[in-house]
Structures are given as C-alpha cells and as structure tokens.
Image 1 (cartoon, helix red, strand yellow):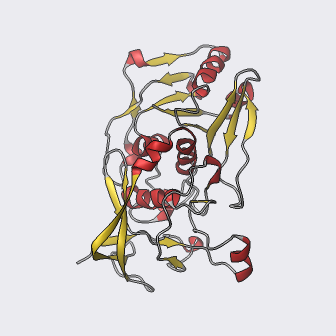
Image 2: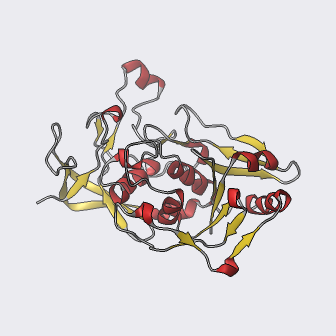
Image 3: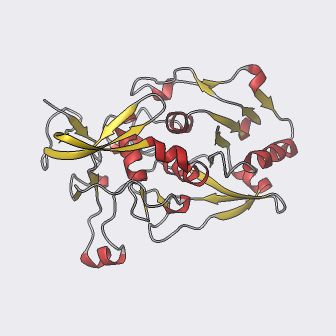
Length: 303
C-alpha cells in the first residue's frame, strides 16, 4: 500500500532523484525575507509571496508548518506520471513528517529534499549542502517544505508543473497561489486601473488541473476604478504604507517581487527579488512610484 508519494523534478534539466537529503532541516532558524531564494523552478510568485509574508506576517508563516514525530514509521515512494516506480530510490522509510496548511487543504510531506550536485569545494563555500529548489540561505527548511507541499497539492507531484515557463498546460495564476497560501487579499490590477478589495475565486478549491480555468471577482461596491495615474500612484502609496503588516507582492508581465519597504517622503518602494544567487542576504532595490507604475501590471496585498 502506497503511503506518501514524493514529488519528482519532472524534467531532465531539473535533475534526477539524487542527491537526496533524508534528515529533516529545522523548519525555522530565522524568518528573514531577504534570505528567501528562488532556484531551479521559474515559479517566482511563490517565493516572492513567502518572502513578503516573512517580512510582514511571520506568525502566519510559522502556523502553516507543523512537524510531527511518528510513533510508527511511514513509507514514502517515488512515482512517475504513469504511476510506476522510477529507477533509483523507490521506497524510503520516514520517522517524521511535516504538515503544511493551505487555505483549503493540509498536505503531509516527508522531510526528504532534492539537493544540488556539488563539488567538495562548492560545499565548503556554501557552508554545507544546498536544496535544489526554493530555499533559505540561513539553513531553515520552511521555504523548501512549503514549496514541496504545494507541488503535491497543485502540481501532480511534479516540480515542473509549478514552472511558469515549463510545458504545463495547467499553469497556475498568481492570484491562485496567493489565495491558496495567504488566503484573503486585495488585487490592484494596474493595467486596468482597478483595485479589487478582497478578491474572491469562483471556486475556492478547484480540483488539480483546473486551477487556471477559474476567475476572481469582487462585489461591485468593493471595486474601485481610477481614471488618472495620479490617483493610482496615491492609492499605491497607501497600500505600500502597510507593507510591514500586510504581505505585498508586485508583478511584471513575467516576474514577481516582494515589497519589503516604503519611503513616503521619497515616494519610493523597496522591492526584493528572490531570483538570485544563493549566497548571503539579498539586497532590495528602491523604485519611484511613477517608475513602478510604468513597469508593473499588478499588486497583491494579503489581508
């Protein structure tokens, strides 16, 4: 009887089933937004959202993950998309699991993580091993475990299905990811000059493979429309002023960044990009709101 099914990379460019870390990482060593790193998978909304939540809502992040020591060990299996055991490690025994709570489902995962193939010199430089997919630079496993659970939940156990530039026909939307992970949110659709307060999905928990088919909406009295850029910029300033208590992310046509600061006097917002080399702490960059409006198409702010 199959107990837990391990997610697999799903694409040769993302590596095979080894090397594999079998000892659990501590979920939390710190909660520094600028320690979050996006890696092999081009899934920028998820690490950006996790960085924004670490910055503004650390308590909610901590409540998402529960480590459970098992009295009876469980088995975890590697399967391909045809449900046949793959070559390599096909069954592993685990004595502890993590439960990761999303809005409408709690997912159980093993602590197993895919790691980078590294030379001895690279291991020394990196101060140890390095997760292959999303990670933190402080040694905590929370980013890796939330991403892994989300791959199980929404991506048919394949990391490639979380890749926005991969071959998946059921590409997840940014709004779907925010709703699943962070729950209620406001959605400022900048290209349409429309602010939707408490945007709600038509289906709160669509079955896997149908997430891209749903739409989001708000009651008409919860929608505000702007005619001028000055009104949009003023409203953006009001949203960004709440960055330290309400996790906020911003999207361009192909990338997502976390909002980690705002200077009202300078009219500047601070953006953090998790897609970087995983060495040390990342550095946010400042951007004037007028330039921000010209380069971005949406802002999502968690309630």
